Amino acid sequence: MSPRVLVALSTFGEYSDEPRRLLNESGLEYSVNPLGRRLVREEIIEMGKDCEGIVAGVEPYDEYVLDRLPRLRCISRCGVGIDNISLEKAREKGIAVRNTPEVVVLPVAELTIGMIFDLLRNLTYHTHELRSKRWTKKAGNLLCGRKVGVIGLGRIGKKVAELLTGLGADVYGADIRPDHEWARRTGVKVIPLGSLLTECDVITIHVSVLENDRFLLGGRELQAVRKGALIVNVSRGEVIDEEALHDALKSGHLGGAALDVFRKEPYDGPLSDLDNVVLTPHIATLTEESRGQMEIEAVQNLIDFFRPGN
Image 1: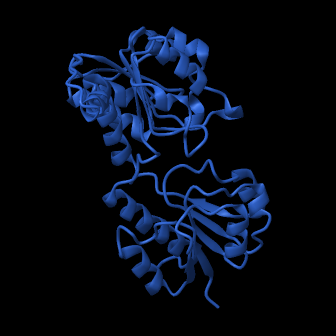
Image 2 (image 1 turned 90 degrees about the vertical axis):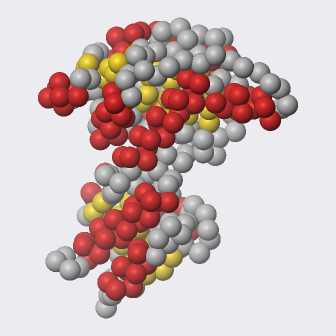
Image 3 (image 1 turned 30 degrees about the horizontal axis):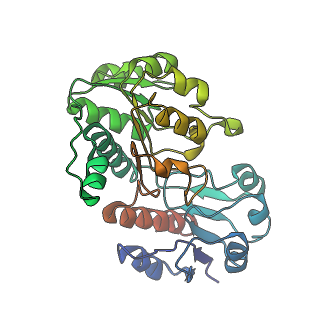
């Protein structure tokens, strides 16, 4: 009997026919989330109770869920982040966890660069003014020659730093385990986090969730940032204290911020009321090209697990 697989993604096959073709040719039995939205815990349990594999999105696979999926052997995450999966419980139950880390690098990096340009040239601000029938002009700033700090020099942080260097920015980086050889080769200056916060005009964050849900940039760190600096976060909502960020933006201590991720999503908080903020609804990896490729790789990871050598 072939292993049963649940495709929990709400938009499976929307951007490419290839993932479904791969499943059809694999011989695996599969069912697809029919609800057209993110599944909640009880729905995952009901749909996945007889499944040995899941092609997963960002729906929760915590201890409660994993304890109620007795046949599950592999979770293949469509994307890079696995914060929605209890890795300790997965290890305890012998459940393999796969992801698709490479395909997300370019779309996240490109959105980061786009957000930096938006903040520097006040694009969202000017769009809002014109839509309100006001011909208002606010001077922006060049990226070339500006000091940009990249917090987190993993795959995505490195790509962002390389793109920024190519655009003429003066790039600094901070990481708990910096790749000094890469930094020397690319001209990125690796400095301590505290120095990066005080020296850089633009700060972009590319780190994973921290232990104990601790803020990377809390009130104290945000007050240490250079006055008028811009902050971009496309990594995890948990790494910034949103209340402290709101206060720093409203007071004028920070010049602006661009956020694609939030502690609670969908986001409807007070940052939406500020005109020096750019907000997007967690779309960093959402391009037609990358989404299709992520689904292909997530499906192939699952096929390789159940049909090794195929």
